[in-house]
Image (cartoon, rainbow, N blue to C red; front, side, top):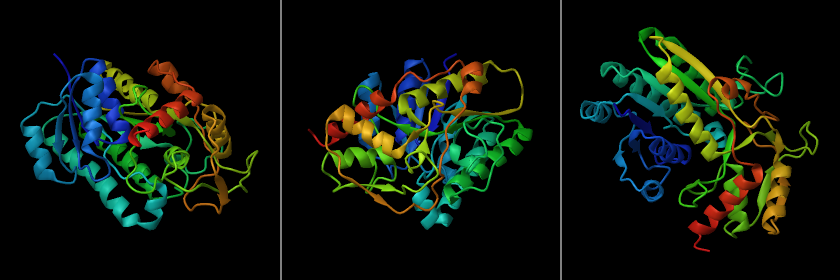
Length: 338
């Protein structure tokens, strides 16, 4: 029987790329999104890549009536839950918005899943659950430290909820992403920030395209080789493929209840300034940038130990940093019609 997967936040950056990989792997998909922070053209891009019409519904995960109606008319086998706000910076300014949206939407989803006896969930988590870890690279046994932002804390709270609710029959895998970048190699979907980008690479590509006057690097006085923050940048299509691997892993397991988590990163730390210089090198574009003050909520350095996901899910990254940056730049040029 073909498995039917509900993808929440399906018009989002990682959600849309995961739709492509799910369809490629033979799954039937239904996508929901509020389109508050994306646009329907992303769904059309997925359709263009896959050659399939996407069963899409404009639904908010906080709306239990709409969610119940959707579950009443579909027999889902699993859910992949992306729908959440994701800006570290915005969460510092608007913490209540983040607690309400990110935590309550998960609880509503779990209640509806339980009512309709859908037990399998892949949860979109983040390396922000680790705060500033004591050891780097960080593995899954690292304790949750004080979250540096309300966004990070919402991911900690959600994981703690999920670990507890498996007693009600759920089977959950939490994927802790590091820093997804890039775009689909076809150039038909990619990151589509509404307004000023909160993530580094869209800000880089928008500056290169002349949309932004210059890039501001937040802080050059961190305890790192060049003074800028260190991150683990991973191609979004690699992230998407990991969700298919996690789904396959969960389906094969015989346990009636299960909670497990996996780091989703390359295992290589790259500084913000290194990434900026790499972009200039591979595109030949003179990218204007300046150094600004540190940004509240930013962790100094974090990158993954991906051994667990490599061994248990048979997943590893396929794309290089250079390919990720080129794909991001190709996508930027496309949306600017250049």
